[in-house]
Image (cartoon, rainbow, N blue to C red; front, side, top):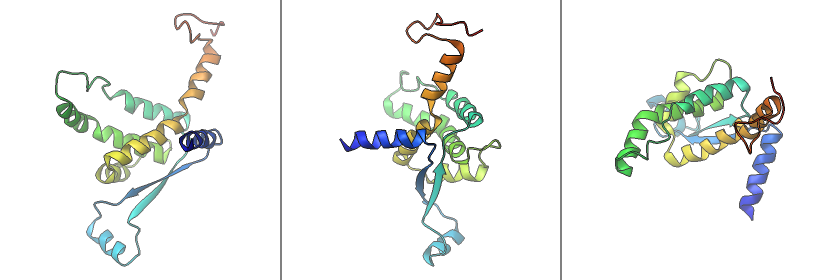
Length: 165
């Protein structure tokens, strides 16, 4: 029951354009960051806000996600080999997706943020944050906009329900 409430609450937050806070542990601090953390001047975690994506950022993230081969696990290789291949080929892309969602700006993410995410994000954190990113992309409303403008029928993808031309 609490999962349903959390999902509904997250959906309401997205509709209300609330940002979602995510924290990433600093796993590989530089030497001066280690000192700052020991004396309490720097936090051991960095906190970021992921706001609902702007149209430009939706396009940027979509282009990045389209680089990922959805069939990487369907190839003849073992699951472990496929996983290693996915890490090698798409790890940087996923780091850039998360960074783009965090910055949500026309200029895109900076190299330092992408590097920080790549070097400090664990696989479980990546899964959690990816869910937030997808929620903040608000794909359902975007798809509804296209359908209302073009008159596309969901039941018959080849047909239209109204002249959208």
